[in-house]
Length: 91
Image (cartoon, rainbow, N blue to C red; front, side, top):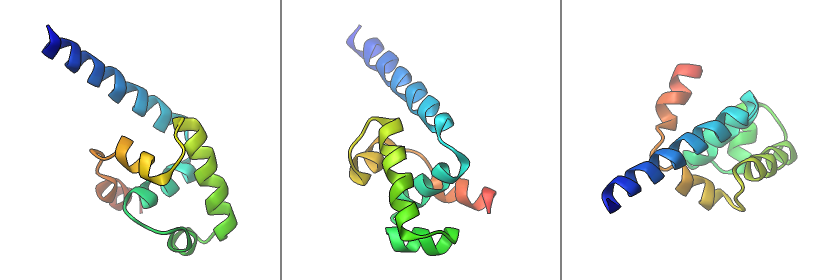
């Protein structure tokens, strides 16, 4: 029963993460992907052709939508997602 409950909880967590991902704008998804791939703010800004301040604003919006407080928490929440492949298919 505990095993089944854990699987159910993981499914809910996964579907919740997907719902939050879908709530992001396209640009916020790009910033999320790059942040989870280890890019620093200035690297994200250069890659996307936006200002460092805009990256910070996007990250704050992302943190709010995911109900987290840091880039580390974002990476942990999405640790099983393959952002390198996602990025390749988008760019």
